[in-house]
Length: 77
Image 1 (cartoon, rainbow, N blue to C red):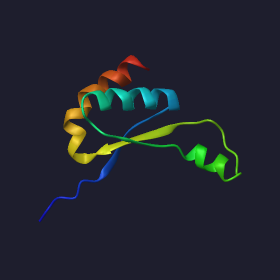
Image 2 (image 1 turned 180 degrees about the vertical axis):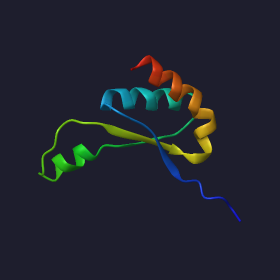
Image 3 (image 1 turned 90 degrees about the vertical axis):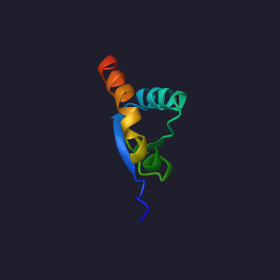
Image 4 (image 1 turned 180 degrees about the horizontal axis):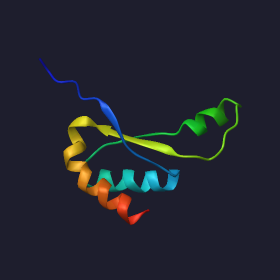
């Protein structure tokens, strides 16, 4: 049976930080997805505050991504 490769959240931060990490992951060949719920609320007219956005990667990429994510988190806290 083939294992499901699910998306997992690996980072939550400001939009700028999240996009920087996404770029760093892309440079080492790891694709990712940004989810920004505050933008969705503003588009729908609900309003919202600029807040945190989430970064997701495939479960199968986690082992290769962890060192970079850990380094990025330490450098940006």
